[in-house]
Length: 434
Image (cartoon, rainbow, N blue to C red; front, side, top):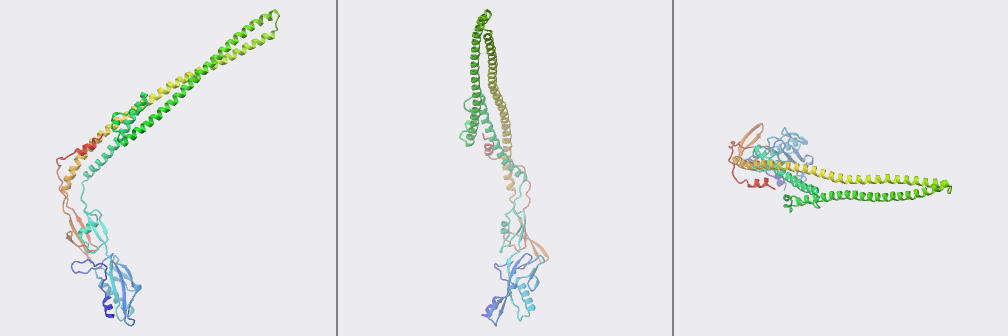
């Protein structure tokens, strides 16, 4: 059993995955590699294997290519195999501790140093290495080949998208302005409900058009009700003032009749006073009554003038209300029509621009894409000690940790302007929407 255990714990590396190799070549460590270390000693007297726990752990190869190991110190690791490092650590522990035999040191690679991609890939940069990695797999990890794009084509594509979005917004604004025009004209004509234009009502099944019509109808009803309420208030005020004027006129007539009677009585009393048949105090009392009646009549006439003036003001207010409303509607109608005309011109211009970009861009893009169907080239840059070498590769060439894969695409020749052909009906349908 002891012999079997001694054969088990040798100085060779115990990696979870076999290290990458070209042919039968052993994997050699480099900066950024990480190893897991175990130190084991067979103690024959106790018939057991003893693990040096202070020595166990995970260690990284520093940028200088060395490992810092407890007790041993710095150990050269770059360019060496795990077997070589294990033997050196074991020999160092034997000398340091004065052991009869060197302990068995198990070294396994726990994490390989990254590989790098650069050139015409979607996401160049460092990536974690995985065993048996090929060039094709490395490109897939980096997001695939990046095809060169024509800035002009991208701009045309963005113009098409932006133009379509602008046309949608302008179309919505046009529909809203047309619905508003119908509502304003209906208010100006004094209709009981909104009479929308035919180009709006014919699209009544569209939920957006239905919403516009419902909103404008609600505005129409609200403004009509407000106008009716203001007019009714002025009519009621006019009616009240007219009735008050009639009452005052009746009171003035009553004062006139009372004045006539008092004057008749005063004339009779005056004759009696002159003949000595009546006292003068009675005459004076009648004269005071006449003066009071005259004062009351003047007050009533003044009040009647005020009422008639207020009634005239009510008439003027009703006329002003109607005129102001008409002027406001006319001004708003002109402004809305001007905005609609401006929007229609913008729609026409946007349709022309969208048609131009939408027809020319797809054909140019197809021609350019055909010219870009070129095979990429692959070059692997590999460091061997202090030497750096480059080698051509294919999609099946294996990648090693620390390698840099350069991907290149040859530049295509600039194609001539292709003759525009094909079906442009789709773009025409997009730009000629109602």
